[in-house]
Image (cartoon, rainbow, N blue to C red; front, side, top):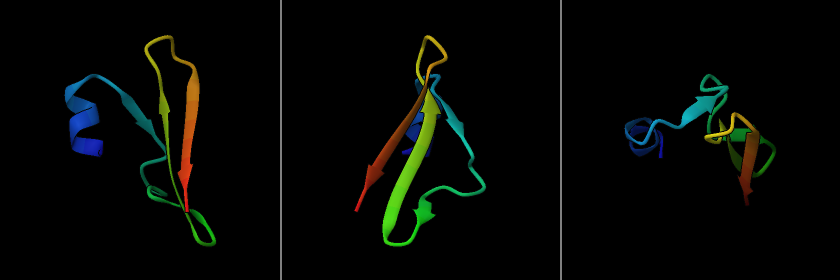
Length: 43
């Protein structure tokens, strides 16, 4: 996800913690084109 997102100009946040959100979840945090922070979480 990170490689393709950089190609599309999406800024991934907290890359030092990606992809772990803690516990049993995976998460990625990024900014959309309007610089709104988005969190995507999956089990």
